[in-house]
Image (cartoon, rainbow, N blue to C red; front, side, top):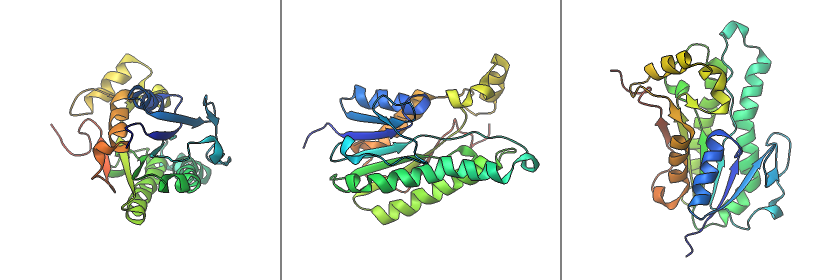
Length: 226
């Protein structure tokens, strides 16, 4: 059996998605990017159908990386805010996975990685919309892990604030970066590379006995106090 695998990364042109693409390609795997500005497949998960004939015949893994950070007081959040966050984080993942499921089923063992947030487990002010959407991602993760076992593993990663383009407004100054770092027991902000390393681990056969899990890569924020 070849060590080279085929992976689809949705949202692989910046941040964690791009770091994951680079890691997998660096390990010699075949990686297809799919996003609104991807070099391989232009794909809006909310509107487009993937051209399956443009993908490898067999997919060994898929990561759905698009997300949102919509932080507002609850009274300022509109119904549309909740709907849009749900569409980006949940519906986009559902549509993607439904389309590629036939290719995942062809693999000896395949893996799916989704993304949640520390704010689902650790209640945080102003996070109602994104936490509600990512809570649904966690439910989807566990449900699909049960339904698709034993052939397809499904896990999610729940990061805390990570240095990515999506979070740049929250980390726009050195003071903001320092304050964010101090909130975490490990006293630093997460990196796209650090989260991508966990995603790469979950996608590959190194994690062949892990499924249905939400792994908290969050500097200790969700579980410990110092």
